[in-house]
Length: 234
Image 1 (cartoon, rainbow, N blue to C red):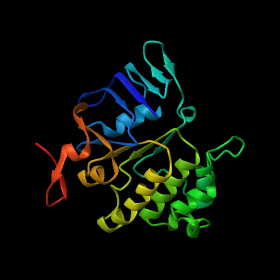
Image 2: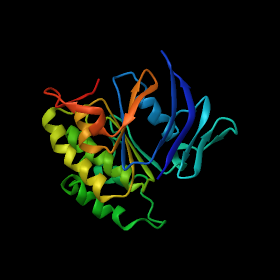
Image 3: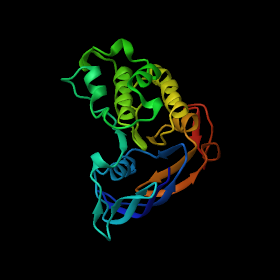
């Protein structure tokens, strides 16, 4: 997978988001403080926003090009997006949430079967429950499962652990590691947690006020600290 954002610009409230980067790692982190433009960047990739200049390409397919007025609708991008709140349907059961967007008419990779994803995320005991009865961590696992079952070419995760307490975060990280290691779907992982970047990601873009400030391997960008465990190097 190669995601190419070429001279992409998007005006936001307090600055202009400007990105010119190619992402091809297994998991790429978009790291930065709140309000840096991280979620807006994911929304551009997902097709929820249109760039005011530049182009976006996924594995040779043009998703958006301002000059040619090309724009692929979100549902046709083969991009899975898990927003911060998971965006589950509260009126549907876990099973029906998982089945949403799961098309059995087309050939799918063997590893992306309903049964395997339910097994990897350990959500079989939840399958017939209502969404409103789930804990925060359970909801996140269901949201991840629903995104994977759409067989995306790219998975976008917007701070999936941000709303969880420390204990729940520790319990959910192994599931994210299993997704990373068992499936061949590359991920763009938005976070402001240095620990998550080091634990999960192969490449990291440091975003500040809409600009890419630094880029590199997490082990080169972050150093051991006490609280949190890692911090961005000066």
